[in-house]
Image (cartoon, rainbow, N blue to C red; front, side, top):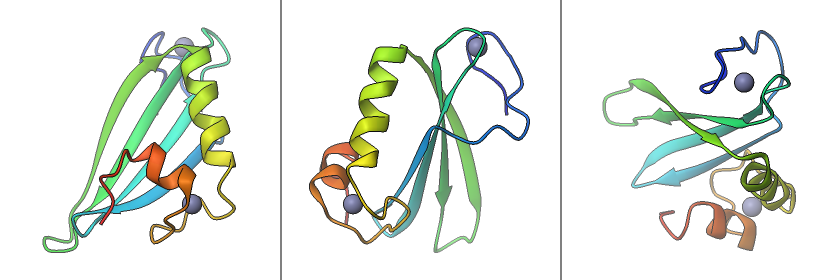
Length: 100
Ligand SMILES: [Zn+2]
Ligand SMILES: [Zn+2]
């Protein structure tokens, strides 16, 4: 994994926040990494496809620190962000109503 903006490798750096949700039966996990070099966020999304059993990954960003910080704060409002079945306000807002 590396910064989408400056290609700084994240190595074993932990994401600033991560959140899981289930969308049309597929598990979707977003990990938000804050780059220590250029201070932007790179978002790594994992999709676990229940029918095919394939896990795919996509990388998006960069997001400005302001925008990323807002998402991290949103995710931290949930006590169980890794719980894809959670339907709290933070989960619903993060996935913008796409949850099952
Ligand atoms: Zn960077
Ligand atoms: Zn939640």
